[in-house]
Image (cartoon, rainbow, N blue to C red; front, side, top):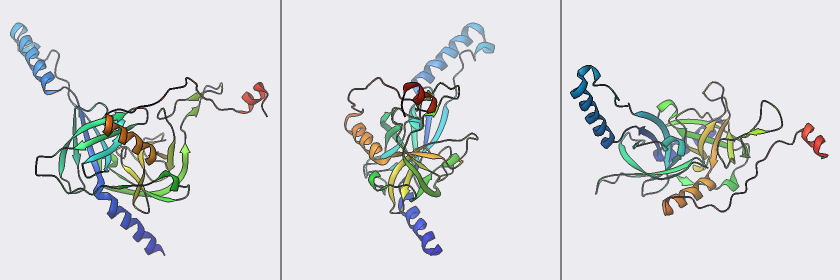
Length: 277
């Protein structure tokens, strides 16, 4: 039984890993801004000498690492908004270590979902193995899941755990009291909670069931140390798929009205003061 159980994990990892990519998002000045900065430095040197040539020095680009999952033969990749939101250049490393540039299709900060697309030269399309998307209605607490991604930039890392909870919000009670709650991870907190190890760099990678179906996009952890303590969160695939389809079709997410109401925990003191049982 143990060997059969291990073989199930192996089959899922082998099936899904080719669709999982590592994303490098570089943010910083564009080539035009760099040229403008160089011209400005030359101007300082001309008037003030070489010792002042570094005034207004060129900022160094910032690098953000994350994960993603290929979901279509056209090269569309699901990932997190916070991985790509400030990027001026995107590069994607495949499971076979081939690298490609990518372009941003759209992003949605409210749900932390983003879509990018692989770019390749004419006639040089790579062989893609898109992952199969599952359905949240089949997800239940206690089910085994795998998280695949690039924690700490270690690509193709597979971890196992179970679904700890579904429809999980992450807003917390205000530590200063008063019955208020702190804002959650996103404006639409409705996560799959898992104890599969998720670490920095896993963001945007898939959470998959034992059928090899993507049921969530890993997005955040609760941790005081910065590493996994067994409390991770994934965006449900039904929500991620809806956002993805909208971003691909229109480049944005259309939403209806927004009701200006917030919620708070109804604790014993609050219920007593309001006369609720």
